[in-house]
Length: 139
Image (cartoon, rainbow, N blue to C red):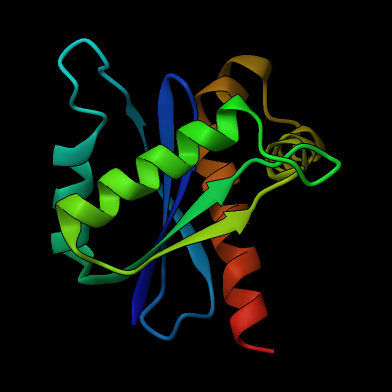
């Protein structure tokens, strides 16, 4: 079963997809959110869902360090509801605290330039979110 992982930001959505066995997550792309036209990347997500035969979606839920849900978390919850309605696939909200910081650390250690990091950070965070979920299911 292939699973898609999403890191939902205010301007972009990082997308990752698992392998067919659900063992590893690979970064696919970063989608720009077009709030003006209320698209929120749904057309591009539909293409990825169809292309990879996605059966479940994991969306990062950014919680505050004390476990409460702030404005970004509320936005992710609202987005997850929209995804459920649009694609009728199971959606899992996954605690993503520190995933973007972990992705940044990996990219820094790989000596990726600031300009390139900015382009791939959301995709990398989606990989971290999805891989965390996959690891929790496989243990």
